[in-house]
Image 1: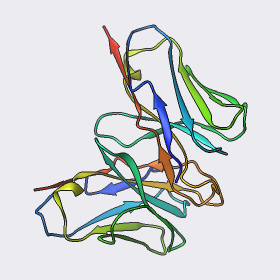
Image 2: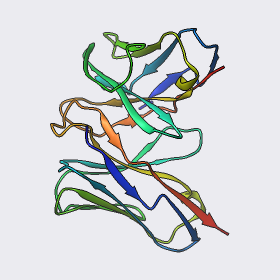
Image 3: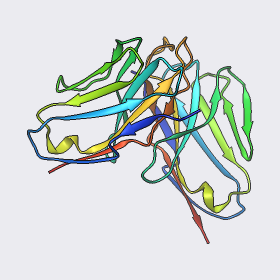
Length: 113
Length: 114
């Protein structure tokens, strides 16, 4: 079974721009969640989607948004980028059904200049 | 959300030594997960624990779900160079579990000295 795939692996954007990151979960997994990882704050939960519905959202501003498609693929969008948004963005997939185990992709390294 | 305290922050050990690290929570958890992350990669799930007192092994790794349900431990026996990396504990962000996000410890950075 293929793992979680995130694209692109690396991105450089300018302050004020917006960015869209993509995630394809493990086949058969219906839950996709997103995390931001920085040296200072560690791994922080952004939001989780299950069957195209946002189930939970972390403590991030409204500039961070996401969506999930009927094939379980997910995208996250960050608008009006700030320097502090530079981070490794990780996507994780879960089968759903109450299981907590999450399987991560390799991440997208976003650098805002 | 719940917060996790993971210790130690870093460990400098020699190849062949055993390693122990732990994680504590201010609240009761119903699940503990342990991950390893290599530089530039996403975290890889090592062990999942679902019952208080549970002891689970994965090769040279052994993890335990504390009886109080507020802590968990990870041991690595006879460390080898490929064990180098950052180890994270994780649990449900909210006590309800299920379709929740995860909360993570700050990580234990394992460094193996030649």
